[in-house]
Length: 324
Image (cartoon, rainbow, N blue to C red; front, side, top):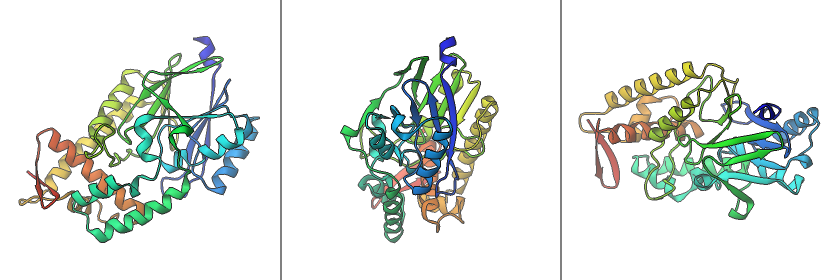
């Protein structure tokens, strides 16, 4: 256990072109030298990551392992570049995340989900174009490019190990990593200090014709993290968290409040997810990626409310209409 504490975790802030701001990359300074996440594929991000690693006596060529919390562009974009420069580094990611490795907004299933949500065809095409551009911020990974993470798998280091916790919700394959010796966790976008993570609409990894139950799974993941009584939580953005219990309670209250608001917004004759999104986030619907996030949030809450028996669901001409 003492050895585990010699496994140094170094946060590195890397710029992104997204509204969320910088992303946190974590250098595990032990053998093998490991990066958890890598930042987006931009020249600025690569330059900053390279410089900050060098301050810690590390070059891209020294990296032996790249572990991805999930496959959104701000987290995985530079993984292949670092891998190619290091020559021997392996990339690890959960198998349920592979659907995100080619730009989630452009995949057939997601366009179908948007149609079912009542999103007009013209807006769907605009969203597809936006995400085709965002997908340029990462290099697609083929199956031969990565090794699969699995729940409770141990990532071994010379001074200890990190245990993999599969924490789906933000995406199906999102993973966290715990150093059991002092209950320190690295959680990607599962827990963030100042914002509530978005439950992104995704195909179910088992049955891709169905939507992944993102919000329900996310609440299970939050409870699982809580069960480890974390003392320090490193998120994908923002400052580390030392008061996880307060964050947990804030998240649960916020989700409960959002559930009530979503149900209250449903019209007497029923509403689509797109109609709810426009009411919930009137300033986001016309803004590129914010539009997709707003619709994802509405879908996640409607799906969760329907699964709990709080609302009903009818399919009318291929569009999902939710009713009180």
